[in-house]
Length: 220
Image (cartoon, rainbow, N blue to C red):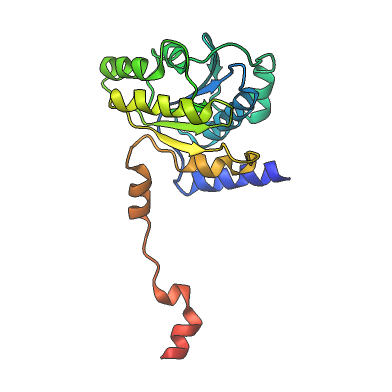
């Protein structure tokens, strides 16, 4: 029932013109500590696939990468396609982006603890992609919990800052992840760095009569 309600919510947002533009890559951490990263990566990719107007790719990475296109796929279909993916090995988000470098990407979502401890590192590959493509796709990090997340996410941020690459973190390190809230986070993602602000500014203002019709009528 909750999944059906989620589907209706997503469709209503798309019908209202609040979908996501462009082509997206989801990089899911499948290193030894990231069973959660694998499952959450599937959920994020499924939500983006429902919202997006372009194409979506999901790649699982440790120090190697294995991915596939998920455009138009449901969460059940993605789970079936990725049922043999298991956690193990080190962590390089850079190999995930390398896997998709030939694609025309408008946005990137990384799902993992940020403990990138193997080369190539994401920031390095991102700079190369930016120079080769002439594009500057926004990066979002769905940060999951692990014993190394607090230390190494800071290292991930340092590398990104040094490379002049901004990213937006979603902190999922506290408590159990609410998978049914994932579409709400996905809705805030945008291929434009100022997309959320643009959506807010484009929303029509609500008058006092609309909000409090009885009160204003009584006041007259």
